[in-house]
Length: 443
Image 1 (cartoon, rainbow, N blue to C red):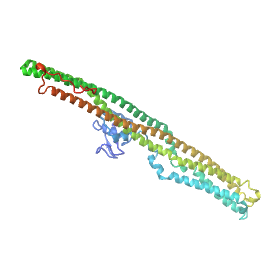
Image 2 (cartoon, rainbow, N blue to C red; image 1 turned 135 degrees about the horizontal axis):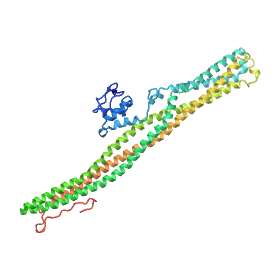
Image 3 (cartoon, rainbow, N blue to C red; image 1 turned 135 degrees about the vertical axis):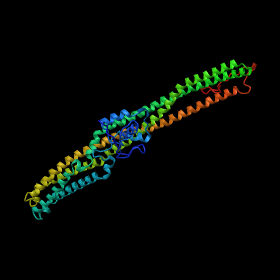
Image 4 (cartoon, helix red, strand yellow; image 1 turned 120 degrees about the vertical axis):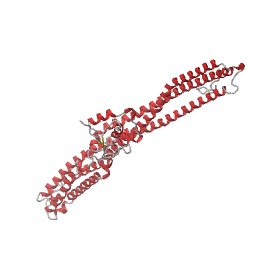
């Protein structure tokens, strides 16, 4: 079965390769580019056959990510897209939840006011139209109670509540992801300390070897000058061969520590890539955490509504304990009594629902606060690892500069030893010494 092309939903991070809407067939030559785009979320999710086929084509030894690409890879580690496909950062900005809750508060307050007014002015109401006034006011309060009840369900109280509950359920997994990046950066800092020590030791070893070679070659060159002056061509040829062998041997022995040092320098790139990826995780984590914590005002509103609803229920039911003589005419037909009783029951149900909404919003807020703690710790390690990177890079430069200076000084001393007047007493060559020993002491 043919492997389906990869469909792009965003432009490729590799300029000119693909734009949103393009489809790209996976080949060996473009597998690395597609892999990077998949990791950054620039393509549709791959099916299992596409993943397997792509994985077989990718050259993992030669796939390089820029810092920006790594940051985008990190952003994909925490999903900031709601189940409706909308980004979480845009949901609460629309204000639908706040508007809905505002209506709920207003309805509850109005209902409470109306109920209390009827309860406390029964005598006056009794003089107006007999039971008709009670029916009218009872109908108004019942309608408002029904409105608050309708606004007490998850989708009407806070249109984003279901998504907040989803993100609350995902919070533990997201926290594990954040913690894993925190641990990785902590490990990086420890590794950089060890790398720096190893680099210094290898540099000293390499520098000592180079200085020893300079000194030995200088001694042989001193002898060579003497035999050249004597016209001893056989000895000259022998010494030249020795010098060549010594230099070749030195080059071979120095290759391994030099490669190790280059490898340690190369580690810096992986450390910076890890840092960039962690920055992306922090960015997405902040979005999710912020969305969860946006439930804080909703929780407060739900609690307020719960209190108002209980007050509304109490006010409605209190009409039954007012002296009968004050309300006898108002509720003569019994309709007003029934309406206030119904309103009280509905207010009670609303209070129960609002309590649930407060608990759900509160759980989201708690999850957001907990995630913020993980993110704050991650930021500390992002900053700390960046400082380690700067420090370690600087130490490498200082070590290299010191080594170069030391080798240069020894080479100058050797050149001077074999320069004009290089022969010592009885025409014997001088034995040059390092100008400065590798440990920094004067020769």
